[in-house]
Length: 366
Image (tube, rainbow, N blue to C red; front, side, top):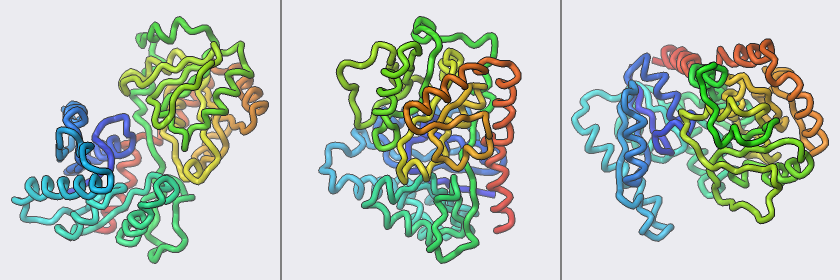
C-alpha cells in the first residue's frame, strides 16, 4: 500500500499528529509526506526530523518562506510553489498512489486531481471553521471529497455531510516509549526546573490566546502562592503581561525530545483551555503525553477524550474548583500505583495503535 500524506504544517515532532502518524504508518507501508512551503530554517529542521524515519519527505523550500510578498498573494504563491515542487518530484511515477491522506490543505485536492488516488481520506484534526473562518470552504471541500473522514473527536462529525457513513473517530495518540522516560531513574531534571520550589504545577504546549485561558493561569497563580507554576512552550500572538506573580515561571519552548525531562520535574500537569468551539473540537495530545509520563492531570472538562480516563484526569472550571482539584491531585501525584495506572491507561493509545486502526479501514476500501 502506498500513502501520500499532504500536510499543512512543517515536518517536525512539535506539530503532533501530522508528524507522528505518518511515521507510524511508514513502519507498515510506503509513505510520502508533502509539507507546505518552508523557509530555509524550517526546511533544515524538517530534514533533521526526517533523518532515520521510515517516510519520504517532500518539503518545498523558499528562502524567506514568501514572507516578503503582500499577505493577499502569499497563500496563492505558496500553494503554487508547492504544486510545482510536487509535480517535479512525482513526474516519473507511472502508478497512481493507493491513498491520499489529506490534512487541512488545498494541495491535497490539487494532488487528487492530478493522480486520482484509489482512496481519499481527510484527517480533521480541529474545528478549522472556528479556528480560521475565511477557510471554512476548504474544510467543506475536503469533507465532501473524502471517501473517509477521520476525526479526532466525535464533536467534529458534520451531520450535514453527504456521506454519513464516512466518519471514523481517530483520537490523537502518544509516543508512549518517549514519555515513559519521565519515570526512568536515569532521566535528569533540568536545572531550570530543579531550582524552582515545589510543588510544581506545569503546562507544556503553545501559549495561544484562542486556546489557552491565560487569564485563568494568572488568576490561579495569584490564588495559590504556595505552589510554583511552570509554563513550557512558545508564545503565539501573546506577550507576557507586566507584574507577573512571583510563583509563575515562563520557560519558553524546549526541544520535543527533552519534554520527558521537564515532565519529571513537575508534580501535576494542567490543561487550562478556554471554553469555545476550538477547544470542544480538540483532542489534546498533551492529555495523552501527561498520562504516558505518569503525571497527575487536572483539565477543563470540555474534551471528549477525558471520559475514558475516569479519576486519572480530574476536571475543574472556576478558580475554586481548580484549587480543590489540584490539591487532590497533589495527594497521590507520586504514588507508584497511581503512576502505573496513568501510564497503563494510554498504553493502547500509541501512534502504532492509531496507524493500525487506519490501515484496517484502508484495507477494506482497497
